[in-house]
Image (tube, rainbow, N blue to C red; front, side):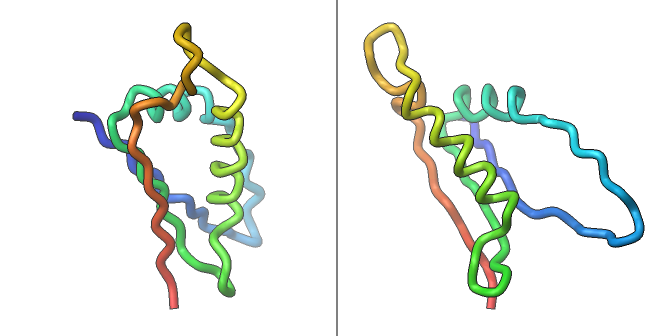
Length: 86
């Protein structure tokens, strides 16, 4: 059984310009290959992080993709979202 856990958080530093690399193609494949996918996010001012939102928006693309049997590409994968904060 394969478990993929993504913690959608990012440290922000006002003095260092961060160059982001898009790791989505590799992460997407790991999610599709996993039996269980858990997305975790801290709560910022009552909302999940912007990184978590970006992952959720990209996961929406799975709704437009089907396998050779006409099922969603994520068919059979168990997923959960965890948001932790005060």
